[in-house]
Image (cartoon, rainbow, N blue to C red; front, side, top):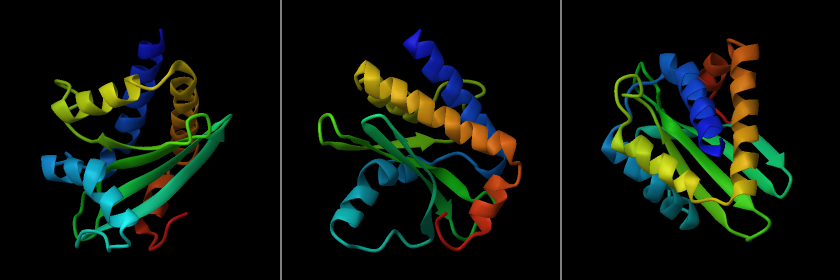
Length: 158
């Protein structure tokens, strides 16, 4: 049941964002999962041609989830993917997850499988909190159709 809830929430959220995005490249996915964290920890600038837009922060119990879009600055299909920072007060750890876009209609991409497996490694409480955070994000998009457009056109994080 835990897996089914996660899959449904993730697919609905990704389909909502699909009209503003294109496939995440392997390089972008690697950057989202490893490169950005290194740059932030070392006070370095983001990769040229990209910016981050924080669009949601949800505190659920002992967990905080911050959702950021990786934006392609010069492209029509601007969203490269979503970076989720998940902090657990239980373990004191912060996890970085990358939600890739594309190829979800025909076959699960290796990048999406990697994302799914990384979330599946969390304990049940953190996974349940993450499902609630994703549901809130999805609800925000559904309740306000212009939400995504405002975020993309904004020059700063919300």
